[in-house]
Image (cartoon, rainbow, N blue to C red; front, side, top):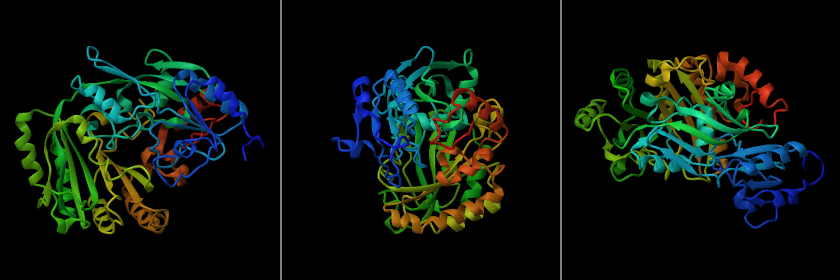
Length: 459
């Protein structure tokens, strides 16, 4: 049942929006209601495929006036399921994928339904890029407003640090453009405050030179000494070295010997954006981390590095995640990675450790809503299975893993995009001293908490 007790007047939306409208019983409804994480098998009253900002304004007003739950979907990757709901309105931005790159100012404006594949493709034509995610089908909206980690973070900052302006539809139906010189408070909130403040219909990003890079994975045995050497590698290396640590089971790839498929390994996924004449030195640094089991590192276009995990985690799998920040990788934390990494339940369940030092740390803790500028690493614990039953059966593994990392966690918080639906109690810890300002801005821009399907900042 809907919150009004009767079916909402969907025909009004069919008459007023330019995009598609799908309600139960319509052709395409079942496909329209799907999100990336198959755990969230919801049945909304209507899914609106917005064609433009006008459709967004109309849909926001419809949900507000009808007293319906509103879910906003960009790429649909949100692990906690913010892009769908039962009996409410899903506002799907997937049709809004226009991009304009200005190579002179090194900026790009991308509509809210774009994925990182879209942005990377458009900007690479000019030899430019900005920090994005590790899976190309991830939407730019959720990743950017949550903070935004990726291979370029050490040298370019987080995605939110590169957000210059945004067009936003707020809960009252207003269309606002926020930038440093107008509605700066709203821009501040969007830089890490998640989907709490409105629907972002377009993002303007600062771009950086990034043509071909030296990139790809190197696999090692799962051993604490390898991770300790990785820790030192990050401490000693130039910021142009993006190197993400992965802990899990050996994937069935041709460059990894078959005897290591499905066995515990750790990997370093390299993204070196520095000069090509340093490639051999960087390769030698990787070789010094430990016994190399398999490696596929070479010169590739930057967008390729963001596709390496696409086949491993396609849409339709069952996910349950946790996340932590840490100021370093102390030995006790490394021991936990080795212990729990050895018990990883599936090849798709990869723990990822992002280095977020360098440029990320040169932003003040209160300069953006994203507060963890003193953390040097952000860890994503990913439980991913092919069916719901196995996922439920393995939740104790990831909860135990999370508990083992918590003593080393900075202030007990985690990256909001890695926190699952049962982590709502962590919201204050996730935002630390910025929580009060975020709550004040929530009262200003969304006093009725229309945008509540997120790690919610209650007004």
